[in-house]
Image: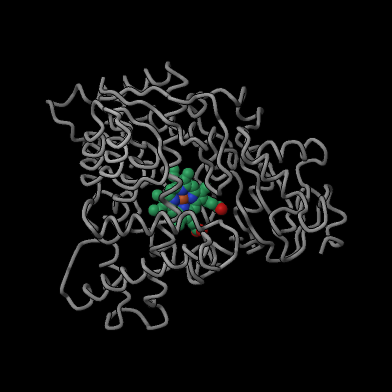
Length: 477
Ligand code: HEM
């Protein structure tokens, strides 16, 4: 209740809507949520209250707050998903579990996402990056939303009499690449064909319903999301049945889950086995958590590199040196991809500057105190990560894109690109691998020019992404 929050500095805004209007409008500005938060931090300090999007929320920032919220010491907080996210992902999703149940699910997904687990998929990722980029050789690339296939693009442009095919880099190239990787890792989905198309279409609908308005009536994004989720589950059911019956046997994540957690699986006690519903909820969770984030990271990376030619040149040098050691082959080796020190710093600096997940949402599971403010059980808490990533004491001249900031180790809780503590991103190795491989083939063989660098606004979604999706023209070097 607002009364309980009286002692917390800040304002709850207007009745019913609170501060939602300024939150939404500032969210879309180039600085994004930072602009909303920064103004209030100037007025009220590091911890302040607000009422946005139907929630009484305490915003907080700084390394001390991060430590308390992210280490979740003594189980003082749990994750706080939006209602629509909870419904779409299902009650047994990793994102909705706490304590032992959460730890158990983390253990389960750790193996395929570990460095060793990823070795199996490395060659697939490498070939897919080359193949995906090959398609664009000599063509211009422009962002166009909601177009799902090359054929429809070509058709569109033929109809309008344009000679060249324009294709979307972030929506099309990155979306294809990251979805094909995860689809193959989880269930050996072929990179082309009808199943891949269905998978991609359903995924896009689910993804855009994740933080939509909570009205489950025909025509709304939420309703369409639930329907697409059910279609995706039907697809998974059929694959699980084929694996159980022995009709198909593969070496993927789903196969190992079915083997360990099937009804007839020998090992473990029954309570420890996952039901099919738990399997499906968590496969969907991995897809949702891993896809838009990696796509956004690749898009921001292109923008920052273009705006910082010296960094791009140094990055190219690192990758050309790798190429120079090889005899004409484009294929990377596992040891080469694990030895790209400058690339690793460029990725970290991109995640710092872009802050793809600008705030981490938690719910107080008990009463506790933070920066002298008394927090009550059940309150919604948001950790503002953008201010942490722009703290001039840790990152001097924070608006400058400078990968050398990562030359030396940073203080704990000052860089949260992949989070920290028990909920730290389990997909970190996969994300870095995908980005490094894609980047290698991109910078060695292509250059790109932005087509609209006047608009830096970000879209008001959970994952921070440029509103115009960064249209570029791509040419071979
Ligand atoms: C550049 C790409 C990525 C970024 C920037 C990113 C960032 C993050 C961050 C910051 C968190 C912690 C959020 C919090 O504490 O509230 C997180 C959690 C998570 N990420 Fe990622 N992620 C990326 C890629 C991936 C990939 C590829 C996967 C899986 C295939 C993945 C799966 C997850 C999952 C399942 C969680 C929730 C963990 C839990 O609650 O225990 N992420 N990610």
